[in-house]
Amino acid sequence: MSLFLELGSAETELSREQIEDGLFAALERLGTRNRVLVVPPDFTRFHSRSGELTELAWQFYGERLVDILPALGTHKAMSDGQIAAMFGATPRHLFRVHDWRNDIVTLGEVPAKFIHEVSEGRLDYTWPAQVNKLLRDGSHDLILSIGQVVPHEVVGMANGSKNIFIGTGGGQGIHRSHFLGAVYGMERMMGRADTPVRRVLNYATQHFGRELPQIVYVQTVVGKNGAGRLVMRGLFIGDDNECFERAAALSLECNFQVLEREIHKAVVFLDPHEFHSTWLGNKAVYRTRMALADGAELIILAPGVHEFGEDAAIDALIRKYGYCGTPATLAAVKQDPHLAANLSAAAHLIHGSSEGRFRIRYCPGHLNRAEIEGVHYQYGDHATYTADYDPQTLRDGWNDVDGEEIFFVSNPGLGLWAYRGRLAL
Image (cartoon, rainbow, N blue to C red; front, side, top):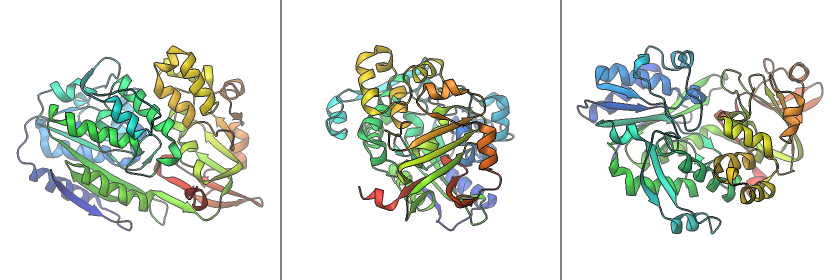
């Protein structure tokens, strides 16, 4: 078990040359490999620089890189246009589509006793360690898991083995991991590397990882520099948990902003090229909630949002129950077998609720008032609110808009914001 590369700091801006040299040096240390599988994120992690790293891995291995399986989880398959935009010249014929319902093998089960322990007695089901069958049965001699470490609402800090067991996982594993994080408490986990969900993933890696080829993690830390430009702050490559933990420590420095006062009005912009659903767009809720004051208003400018769930069945569940808070959602899980069979949807409903503490106003480009209010959000006309709060002129952080103080976030997927006083609660 080794850490092959640790590069960067909170002030570093890695150049293309440094990234290439670092990756190639780490891959050289692995020795000759003949059948390589790359598992990068999908287009929802466009800014992770994973597309660039995948293209570099293809340049390094050539014909020995035989498969690329984006870690879709339950997301929709990437379009040809998204693949071209994210992965550059990487050959299109190498890409496979993860089918989280059908292309799954179970490597083993994390026992219910362990789940009961890490959930502090809240849950007692088993957790299946599921992956796409290509990982186990594709005759590969190396899996490169590429992705960004950043604060995350389900697992605390994204990436590491999450890319494998959730990104290429099956329905039951995805549902139960999401629900574990939700019932344990999102605000207890975001920004933390050691969480109940992470412990479950670590258990699966330790006990069932031998069923797979060697997995080497290529993990980035991305942040904005003083000019507001996205830069790679760190690159970590290794085949053990130390690689993830070091990247997570740097991500906290770069991606976690602690505020000295609470936000009473926040405006969050969802890039239409990246966010098409509330399933993804609710990062606007997750990542700002710890910074919002009681009674605050969260305004979400969502020009590309046209649906709730990216999966038809989950979309229907969101429309049926809406973001109605934890008690109502847990009651619905007990009463509705269909919701109980789709626990990631239930977790999402909990994550996307303010629990009555602050107001959420969605300003979508394609959903109407009845649809937004039907899921218990307040509706905002997109054109009107964009005119009042123009994302092209606002800057990240505090702004004065006609004498009104607002806090602006241009991309909620890149960070986590919290009020210092709330961290002590």
